[in-house]
Image: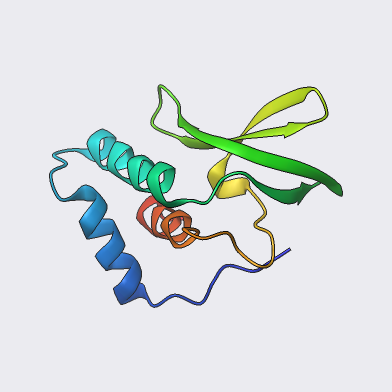
Length: 107
């Protein structure tokens, strides 16, 4: 599994600013970041959870403004907070938006 990319805080702050430009509160900021992840993250991709391959097919946002990955394995599906999602190596295109969300969230 890949480690978080080495992205500068300045670059991540630029991404956060881009995603939250017209947001007036934390909820709107979370939606802005979700939108950028949804539009830019190359899906599907395969990663590992608990030693098993899972396919990340989609991202979603909960009623509590938490961004989650919709992961599937065989016939099962599970929603995993994107902040807890192990990333594969190489990283999928658009993974920098997850890192921007991580920085914004304070994780």
